[in-house]
Length: 481
Image (cartoon, rainbow, N blue to C red):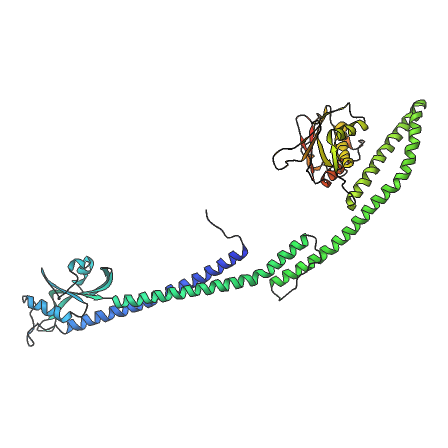
């Protein structure tokens, strides 16, 4: 698996190091090649010039100073030895050949088998040389055929070929020391590059970190956060833009909070103001509903519509008052140990639902919760199931054992109707949300499930809704305190 750096700091440092190392390696490699080429070429020129000069001094026959060695004169062993003696030097190996005859200097470390075949073939025509590695050491082989001057001064080949092995150990040592020096310089360069990369990355990323911290603070609600603008580069422009954005956001949020506060206060005030006339209207409609059957059909129906709408308005006002308490943060929790079975039974009996709902609760199940708010949760869920689902409606409760919800109270409410559509499930707890046009004029206020969710969350719990086959299942989780 290939590791890929993901942090901006790591990418900056690695990029800086790669550039520095690449540039350093290119400079060191180019410098090494130039020095190596110059050093070896100088050694080659020196060796070839020495061989040429030596051979120029033995153009006369060995042992005769006033006669010219004819080209057809038979070469003796002494002649071969004289050529070897003339060409030998410390640490050199000299091999002179004439036909099948071979002669080398004393202590020679090489033989003709160490001479490349191509070099032998070329040496028969001209002076040639080649660098080779023999016995793990570099050598320069200079090879040429020895020529003699005839009586008329023309040089002719004599059939003698000389092979001179010149050591390049000194040059190799110089190059080795150069490599070590370049490696040390590369290490120092790498250390300096790393230090500079870290310092540069810190200098570049410090404003970025400050921006990140300020953005997180801004996201956490600290709208007053601002950053000092230093310099005139791109980061300074980004910081200035951030400050302008934060200032605009602070103004907008402040305005929205003011409007929201005014809206909440308006809803709370209107809801409270409506309670007094609603109380009087409810008393009047109670008397009218008793006489509705004695009135003419049209008048009786009108009275029943008024009674129904006033009752719906009363529920809406109560729900609005309850929601306004949650919005204002005034809702409080008063836990006490409650018999869950009795609490559920009382909730159903008070609302006349006992014969329409099947209740399944273990005997003696107790739990610490706010009884009034628990009653509101169950009433809203069961009422929703009865009004929009189909019988049978089943309510069950248990304490979870094991898992991440161990010890929590689980209450489920299930109906067996057509079920809530999948696309509607994410919105069932939204305020005033009603699924479908058939619910637009339903008896509900559109706030029941939102109030149930708010009460469950006040307990530290949650409510979920899911489709069943058939029907819908609401599940309430209340953790133990």
